[in-house]
Image (cartoon, rainbow, N blue to C red; front, top):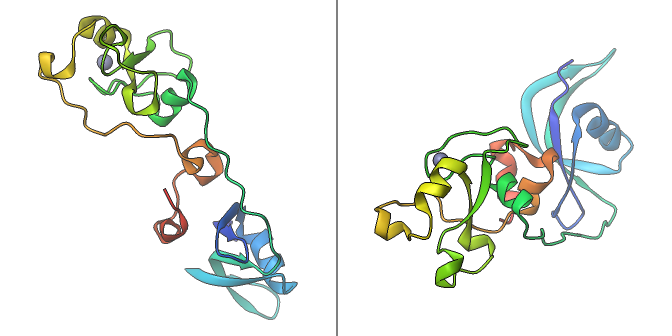
Length: 169
Ligand SMILES: [Zn+2]
């Protein structure tokens, strides 16, 4: 049996967790949840066929708890998937080549914030120095934003397209 990932919502339809289809089916059979969306596959048991859920909603109330993710270099690297935002060099997550670049340089008053910080390889960072992007004719392909709860918690990585409507990013 294919063990698919299943998105678990609380009773208010807020994202609670990700589980696997076996655990999700147990919750459905015990009457603790209902299935909102299904995969195309079925699970065959001795005398019954079940559709594999892709999203379930728990009947019990769980508090919706999302802590804002702290700003720090390691989390900026995680947000940018360890990829230089200037040359798109992909780095190892502990690469000594990975640096935090202030888009507007600190020397020009650029703050240490999510929106002014990107991951840069050493080469791009030292080439950029204290210059601004417009001085270099560089453009960021993606506006840097806050690392979201869904990016931070690996279990939500590579979400099924059907899950996205439940993610408030
Ligand atoms: Zn680079």
